[in-house]
Length: 301
Image: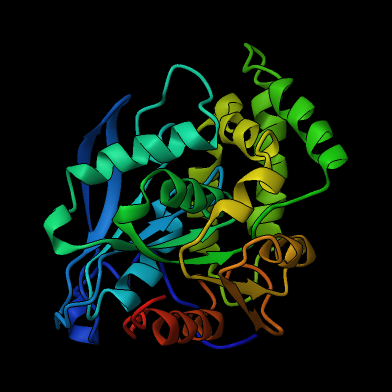
């Protein structure tokens, strides 16, 4: 992948309308555990399409979606929520599990989306795929379609080991050793191993965002690794597009898609990570999402 890097800090938020994209704005709405932070864009040209809700990976935030919000927000309303405890959303008193996080976000959306406007579309990435699935299962009438990228369905044995690690994550202490070790590991992954299409400035900003929860960063992972995929995925009846990059969990995600009878799969060949920041990856993602979401659902489906 190549091309001029897209900047989180400038292009989408500074006079976005001049570039044919809406300005991405920030706000807060009440949730069950305090305030929920979100980023949003209003359609420059309203075509009557459903609101698109974006749910992020862990331990990230809606910051990773700034470019996608601006692109998809040209002709529909887009809302990207910070999961409680991540980004700038207030933290719950304890890890909630996927059902609990999804319910909290559903409560927040009640203050943002008028139900008379019809159901929303959902896009989830990694942890956000499970939040999207649980939202749809708990509130089926509030969802039209789902697009999912990177369903993190490891084997039951692997999930048990990862759950144990998440539950045993060391606490922040006076010497800073735990926090500094976490910061270095995140820097190496987020900044050092980034796609060339992502700027250093934006990668560093994402590093700060991912580091912010510190020893609470694993809370959502408790839900991810305790999630009973084999029971929950087959229950999903909404139309689903699994839009899958060639990333390290691609096979796990494709295996998970087989458990969703309503799912179709589209591969993003040759595209691996930082898909919201590399220009070519972002263009491929946006085109695929538009092909799937812009058309009405046929009668009887």
